[in-house]
Length: 293
Image (cartoon, rainbow, N blue to C red):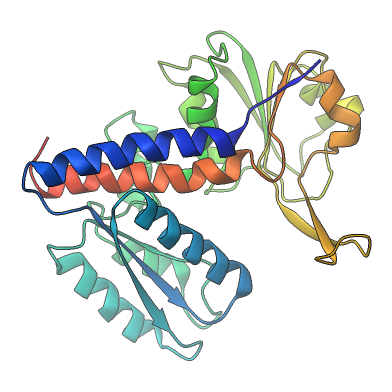
């Protein structure tokens, strides 16, 4: 019988740990950590993500600011806003919610963020530091995956980890992190062009799926007893639900779950830990900014 890697319950526990630390800092006379977000346009998913980040910030006692810009905002105006946040000593870390409108170059925007405030871990400097094993802000979803494995006591040393999906946001960084000392996995990074993908996936002790295709991983791709982490999240129509839709992942859980030793649910697995990672990165940025470490 499989066990759930319950990100929702774990995130509640870690939030309380962060909130306790914030209360201690305030008792010592320090201000609260401050996380800001920039959002451009009216993308529904982005609005939801930013609202959840704001809610979580308030739950742990952080100050939260949201800078909202219209779809027609120019790249120049956005870069000026980033420069303002870079130079504001009261703001410890900030994110620019992606995706951005097509007329704005995302890489230009990411490159403009100060590495010391880049709590999403997307700038070239933080990515480079992470790859070299130096102190860095690590992207939130890979960090959340590592937190799940660590907090649930999943053995990683010497295990074969197969990552399906090579994005800069999830697949590539998590493959790098799990190969390093402390996790010590042997990692195979697969993607849409990988030959014999199902055969390779079946060799995984730990299978991380972040390919962005609904129910892509089926039973024939999973070794019995494997740990399966499903990063995907897709909204599909379902007239039997009051909402009119249901949420599924990149794994076909109806086939796969009973093969697993541990598996993440969707929703409620990796997602809640992504926001936790952002809060943890903000605390780290705050301590550096306040010279508390």
